[in-house]
Image 1 (cartoon, one colour):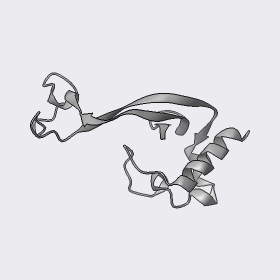
Image 2 (spheres, rainbow, N blue to C red; image 1 turned 60 degrees about the vertical axis):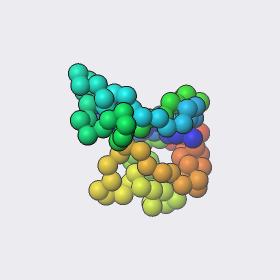
Image 3 (cartoon, helix red, strand yellow; image 1 turned 90 degrees about the horizontal axis):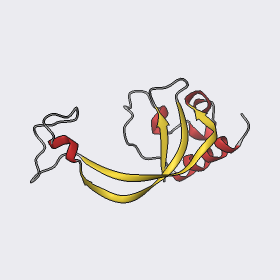
Length: 108
């Protein structure tokens, strides 16, 4: 399970979840010198960046906002909510995922 989090939107929120449909493989965009994700330290022989393919499972009717997550006692230790963490890819504990799914189903 992968949560889809809008980190550059108003409000900041988890808007749905996806599943990984292809295991990690080298990120070819890091090798494209003309692309915006080029990394000269990544090579075909020694790739640094990896990607996965995902498929949308469910779009939430009720996005779970960052503020709503901050107000949930059961999410107080969630890495997304910890100061100094940069959002990219981070683990979500099973209990946290369950809490987020409950919030998405509620009529907050």
